[in-house]
Length: 473
Image (cartoon, rainbow, N blue to C red; front, side, top):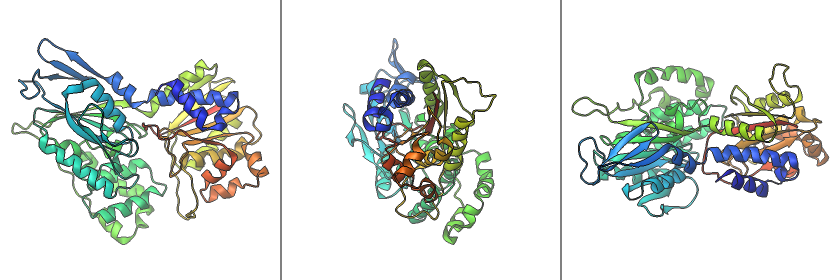
């Protein structure tokens, strides 16, 4: 979707954005960020199909691959058929864009999705199947087995295009330990103050299709991974837990440091899970041919949180706002980050290089520790961040904080985030709501929904972490 379409959707689904000029301006800024990381547009920018005197070439990022005139009979240095495999929240849109690009060259494939239509992508033999998210389960096991079976049809001279985005860790999985234990560990860690980087490092040790496992399935065929990053820092080994990124010795040696980083979170796990973590499987090495040459595996980063932030900043500048991208990236407990951002709005530091009207844009990924939260509590890290900001925003005229999950899904709710302003706290108290109590029980969704301050997009089909837009009009 383009900026205009995203603006329309945001205004239609989020009355808090539509109610005045300030909200509408924020809607246009958010729309620019989402349009910049649209999977189809990103594939179109980074892939090309070039005609040659004999055959043609596939240009994928900085890599060029000669394609044989007859896919069934590739000559020296040429690739034959093209396959599409992968998983993630953006995988269906990425795969469909590749089908548009390479058409009859595509022999087949399969992508594992969380949302959207299932069955073949129109005009192709690339299938879309459903997996489980955020914790793998029976649907993921079945979808993964179906994808794995494709390996038998892929020839050594074929070209495998792997589309990977956030969500792939759960949607594509073949644990190397008892599945019930793997599910239990995921449930324990995902509900705690544990970074996704740490969780994905564990996944790389305990899942056969991580740490290069997906690429290994298709060896010796060449694999090109097209990646949309949902990880702060864009370490490709951690996006979807790196299905096409092989582990090196340094990563294996760093495992004790990972457990030390997790600290008491590991100590407090049930004994059966602690025992599992104490003896991690060793990933298989990068496959090599008879001459000792490693399998050809290449990576192309299509989009990242920085792209969304920079697009938002450009749109804000076009809106007449003095705008900058604010660092460091969001991280750590969501409530702490909400207070930090609200404090910036209340008292901008003297050395901050902006003048009102101004816009600060940041992004990243925070955490929420749900230990002790009642079962009835609903929310997500973006909503919790917004709720925590209310006291420091109170009474500020012409100031607002917009939070947004780029995938459109903030926790297990129908909201992507929230828009809170200087009057949000007063409106809450006038309605008999208690923001402090709601924050303590991690029930941000209930309160913000009652205020009409939620931002809704529906699933966006992309995933590049979270965004926060701070506006001082």
